[in-house]
Length: 362
Image 1 (cartoon, rainbow, N blue to C red):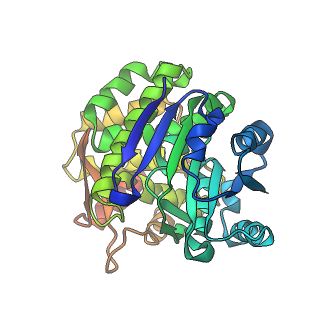
Image 2: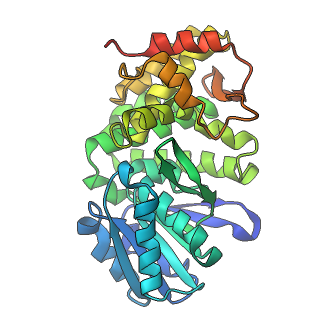
């Protein structure tokens, strides 16, 4: 039942393998290792579940491990240094391969460590959350957070392979599964209206973790992202559309404290705010906005911005965003389901009105 896609980046192209039971496919993993040395990076939640299976798959290699604390609040410079400490202590050289076994936080940090260690070593993604399988493991974005802004320190560093074993989602907490669905819905909203319609008809199967439904949403999401990354690797144009809801969402994560809301939860509320603003600007119909909000709610995700952040605080937090250019805030907005754009051409008074309207009641 394995599906394989390719991220087409010339000589740096790489496969995405999707299906159940792939963590035990030593042949797939061995094909992606640059030399004979592997540094396996995971966290305290994933390690008891899957570390030994992953180590067994790398039985033919010299494999060390580093187990990091779990949580968005640990996606920082201090935790990153633990990866460098392990690489140096075990004398890893430029032929080593860093392997990320975990969710988006582990993937981002392990990838950033690989981008920096000896000015760049090979990197493999084994994502263990739905959000990482459908989004963060693909495309080469790596980095850490700063107290003033999320993901503001990092590098583009493409993996040699992404291996998405759908079986590991069996142990994923329900809240984490729903957070991943937010990024799935995003693809339907920005560029794939047929997928959005499929999600409207099949959300119950997704939330019930039916294998065929999970394989479908991961494959369709990765196909969408692979096409965008191939067209715009370094986010100079169309790739910015993948950030629908993220400017609002990153403001929530930074403002409330990393880890208070899951990333997908913050993005979900952010997409609702972006849809509301799109309606107020005359870009999106109210009906399409209502459909987007209804699907996000069906997935068990928040549809309102947190009351704890007032409008002016929200605006200040949004100003610390990678899409700000020449001091102008650029947002991903919608012209309808399946049609998105990036623009700085909006009235900030209307943005304030939208944020106020989308905040939850205190």
